[in-house]
Image (cartoon, rainbow, N blue to C red; front, side, top):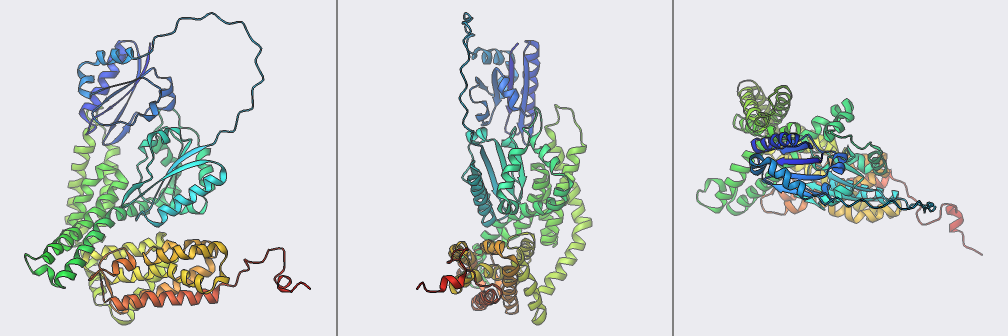
Amino acid sequence: MKRIIAITSCPTGIAHTLLAAEALKKAAEVMGHWIKVETQGSIGTKNPLSEREIAEADVIILATDINIDTARFAGKPIYQVATSEAIRNTKAVITTALAKLPAEPAPQPTPAPVAPAKPEPAAQEVKKLVGITSCPTGIAHTFMAAEALNKAARALGYQIKIETQGSVGAKNGLTPEEIAAADAVVIAADTKVDASRFTGKRLYMTSTSEAMRNGQEVIKAALALPIPAAGTNLVEAVEAAKAERSRSRTGPYKHLMTGVSYMLPVVIAGGLAIALAFAIGGIYAGEAKGTLGAALSMIGGGTAFHLFVAVLSAFIAFSIADRPGIAPGLVGGMLAQNLGAGFLGGIVSGFLAGYLTLFLANKIKLPSTLEGLKPVLILPFLSTIIVGLLMIYVIAPPVQVVLDTMTHWLNTMRGANAVLLGIILGSMMAFDMGGPVNKAAYTFAVGLLASKVYTPMAAVIAAGMTPPLGLALAVFLFKNRFDTEEREAGGPALVLGLSFITEGAIPFAAKDPFRVIPATMIGSALAGAISMSAGVQFLVPHGGIFAALIPGAVTPLIPFLVSVVAGTLLTTAALFVLKKPVNTDVPAAVPAAAAATPNH
């Protein structure tokens, strides 16, 4: 009896995948062989193969119509055919696969016993890890978490490779060989990350902020995990182990940030198209039919800005229920936009579509031959109909009233009210510098772009630029208040601040939070207040000073620049008052006074 393992997969992961799997199992049993079949499709991997089963297998059969990662089968005989061939000529497929096995060697005479030599002490094996970092924008936290994990691994004497995922795609991608050789996997992400390629590996999931704060502890925790047992669904096991504490604290936030991360490229492209339309054809460019300005206005305002609420909703649902949640999320989000419920309705429809689809997926039970119909037929259809009806008759009307009221209030905001909102948004942006409070203010401003309310976006961007800029200026003016490492971070903080990456202030805040955070909050509050009181409008949700220099993207430009400069100067002044001089040039063992005394 031979041990066979197989993978079946077709583009949809439904009919041919399941039929080929069933045919291989029945034929192998009739022929007297042991077999296990893993199926891969649109609902993920089912019946996954364990490392032990792969190690004990005599041959691998790949009945697939798409490319399959074969790195985990290194050293094993592999026979690959189409799913249709496995369905029609199953016994011949198995026979041909077994023929690839090497001939068994003839028995050799037993050698005379030899006294065993004293074993040499084995060199300590270097642990290898791979990981993924990802945040909603794929910029600051993504790369800072990657750098923190790299430093932690080097300090522990381990090897690690980190793949970064963001709005522009994956960088430093992990190869199948690197994954196969890894002792553990670390995923530090604030958005949904596909972990299916890490089946059979120790998998530790955490947030980017935790990886930045406690990189060594994260790596140790990953290596301390038990190797998954045979037949274990790794992702489900990890999620169960995270328990209620993790789900209640990070679940909805992570789903929302996943939606935001996929929405941002649409908003940025649309906003820049609108800005170019204004630069070419003026504020009424969209009304001049047949012109380039009108075309750009249609691309940005008529299409991208009309679409991004649906994208937000779809990928919130995707984060919760995977691919079956995309269709009801898209439809619910588009209904929210068309019915006037805007981004608030899109958020509601995304969570509704996701949790409803997940509930139906768990409750609807079908025979194994029909199970593949769930992700592409049953779940999208039922969820879309239910979400659509609820949006039309129950959710959209009251949400529309709330959004209309808020939009009217923001558009008519003058004087003290505008200043107060600017102070609140500015303080939130500087409070945790890319954390949940910062992202709440940012998401609020981005969502309002769909309703053509642009003033909160300007306040948020001005306030987000201020903390790293204020710290960079303080480092330049008051070097004696910062240690050597902080002085080195001053240059990067300047560039990050100009680019609207608030996280550039994190290295300073992490070392001295009780002085740095109040100083940055004061400056950001002032920047937000000036921007709101001046009625500055920012049409794109990112880019900082570089987006502001595009004609039409920021109006009026001078008050925006004044708000950034004023916030930066106030932050710098507050740092001068709050931070005390540090002695970095004199050895710690020598009192400063003694060091200053001349040697007679």
